[in-house]
Length: 171
Length: 324
Image 1 (spheres, each protein chain N blue to C red):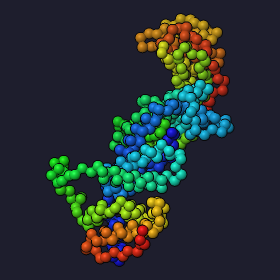
Image 2 (spheres, rainbow over the protein chains, first blue to last red; image 1 turned 90 degrees about the horizontal axis):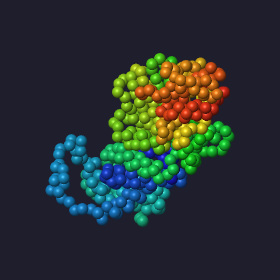
Image 3 (cartoon, chains in turn green, red; image 1 turned 180 degrees about the horizontal axis):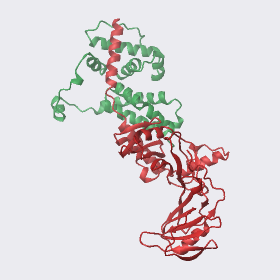
Image 4 (cartoon, rainbow over the protein chains, first blue to last red; image 1 turned 135 degrees about the vertical axis):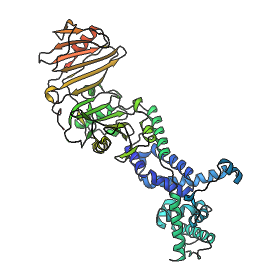
């Protein structure tokens, strides 16, 4: 398979953005790197057949995240604080001070993967409901429902914030 | 702010914060480079000559797309004697004139040089099928001193402020270098030269090309050099298991100390045996007044045969020598 110049240009222009998107999606920089790497290696093999690379690659990353999450769930090794401390004792780092955003990230990490994907596409990628529906290959009403439920969960976990207004239709 | 907006704003801020933890792309770039290396080892090697042949075909009106010539053979003999150099800088420092072009079949580097006194700018193209350049992508990604050339990561190397080499890959099959010597702030100059490089081919047409070569010997390069067209020299290089041979044609008379007479191309020539590090050579003055010399660690008979086989070209292209 020929690797075209177009692929190089795409990687040069978009790799950072893809890694950021994957990190937000997967909530794990290392997993994000693995996902992006796997996706680009496969995309490289069939680059000449890909019609809309930006959409195609981002969709592959999303799908890969969903499947990786499923695989990873079966590989999870139980751990505890003593084990983690043995691997690397905690040290103070002023750049990682805990604040409201960390609290929100912790809540986002509890969302079902499809809800999280919809939230990321809406609030990180700024997609419209229709664009998210097309991207995730589902109905607009499903997208609204996913996001609405996600916001309700997040709001419930942040008691300092007033109740969220939900407008999405049920799935 | 509505409650919904407040939540949504916090979600956006949190996701942006998370995005800042994204890894840099070096590991991914390395993995892609390694995958390409594996691909190169699996498929027939493409040589720079294939690109050159494609350019020739396009110039001749043959409907051939450069990116579809991957099945072409690695060696294209018809192009060997008149190589095409695929890259041209659009910008050079003031006062520099082109004085050197060299290229050849297979993985032979394409080299162009511009000089101004003792200062020099060189733009060269190498094939990633050449083992020496096969790992360039990894070397670039491993080096900290990186810049961007045409949207691609390039590396800068150089021992001083007046010498710098910029190395980048315009595609996965070629490595380009822009080297600047004897120029203040060489790095900046090299970056400007590199940024201006485009795929504008030029031809190397000297005043001779090889004829028959000794068994196992193959053409390596054709080089034209000179400060202007009046003192142009054509050099032809070939090599094989028995050694290397170089043929030079120019206006200068070579040193003939210790020589003996020999018949070359039906004319009276001279043979100088090898001595210490000096190669053996046969030399003859052509009827045009130009001197033809074949040198190498070869027996006299083979040197004479190479010189006899040289095909002279009555219309060499030297017009570019000494120009921008």
